[in-house]
Length: 434
Ligand code: GLU
Image 1 (cartoon, rainbow, N blue to C red):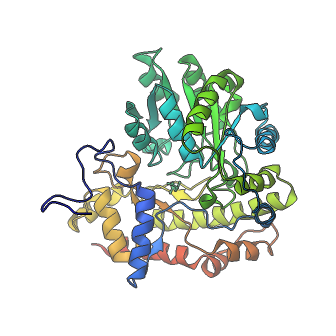
Image 2 (image 1 turned 90 degrees about the horizontal axis):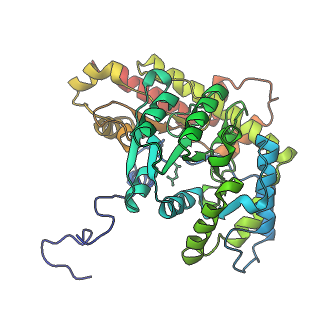
């Protein structure tokens, strides 16, 4: 394409998305791949992708359905929708029917469509996952970042949510709660969920409960807030994290009966945009949501690997001086290096972007700055995803060790060497700075 001299071929002032860049998670993934192609060693802690393979029965089902070529119903395959509803009944004690379920090409797309069809402000705690706020910006919604405190492990506190809603009580709002959390690896207690549900009910907000990491609670103890605010909660889930199938792109939204109008509005937009979700993937997803012993065993072993690995990285960072809490679910940590602020400043590091860039240059560990998650730029926080290991190999080795046994350091060093080496490299880097 011809461009005038001095005019950038990538910037056009008429763009609706002026000022927005490619999503941070995907950008760091591509940057890491580029550095590796250049021959550099990179520990890939940037993109939060499950290291584990898709469970074999689900892969078999995909293979068996490769011939499915028809467009499927906009809301999703009937059997899959029924299976997802049954899954919520079984796992969370929440009564829903297949009519309450919407299937989409990833929960990220469904979140975008929700923000598009519902004219409400977006309310999210800081820190929150990198894409909620940019999606709101794309559709022109107001964004309210609710403050959290490091001493509460960055969890959203009910009184803070109340403070935001109090000023204009009847204003339409979507509140997104994500737990186990991306980026912190923390989750809420049942009492905290009840208290948050009470505030959500008081202001009749639409509560989008992003439970994509629910099955990766390290002890299998995830509880859905939909139990305490059923009439206003949409549960968001999908195959990406617990089923190792991020690239398959399948997400689910499960609505209460009272929000059927919202499901219908989203289905209208779906019908005019992506049409329906990939047919073979939907057939295979039925097998994943059906559960059963093979799926349970896969999950139990995945959780145990993540629990021990998360603990290992957490200890390494804590001992090197970062403020960080032990993860309880998912595969992220959100260390705060403020206790080392003076030392880092002597080396020219005064904000989270510099922290990540220098860490990548000097240790090879790719992470994302806290600023990408809505934290103040000068805060020395970052997110790391401890997923750089061969999940198939780790899982089959873990399956040889009875579930009631611990996985020791030798196991982690043998099967997750990039994670243990990256932890040592970060620790060494921090300690050697004077
Ligand atoms: N949820 C993942 C992350 O936070 C990656 C997927 C995405 O951003 O689309 O790293």
